[in-house]
Image 1 (cartoon, rainbow, N blue to C red):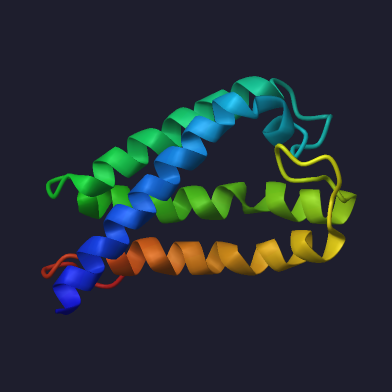
Image 2 (tube, helix red, strand yellow; image 1 turned 180 degrees about the vertical axis):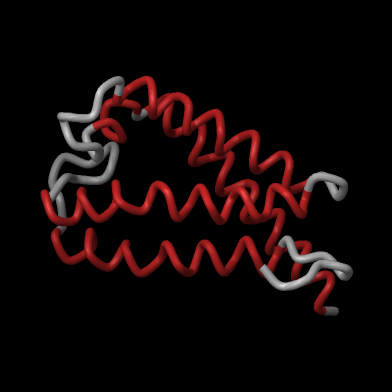
Length: 131
């Protein structure tokens, strides 16, 4: 039963990540605004991270690459967290939104650790040690 729940959670996470990766191309400017202006090549970074999210999602679905993808997805989520903090501090609306809801920007920060836990739990294989 737990194996089935993990598998469903993993597929849902992968679809979420694929959707988010595609959104990086559709709403690139909105995502780029979440990065401080002094950072060079912001839009290019957004496209690269969009590709990374799609690739990581696919690799999570392949049993032979799942363990490494699980680790690198968690690392990726930690690395991009400062952009979410910056968006909350600067009051930058989410991509595709006209106005920022300040409370929601701060609440969104709580979801990053949840996403990290989700991928680590859902992609854990029977023979994995804890990461």
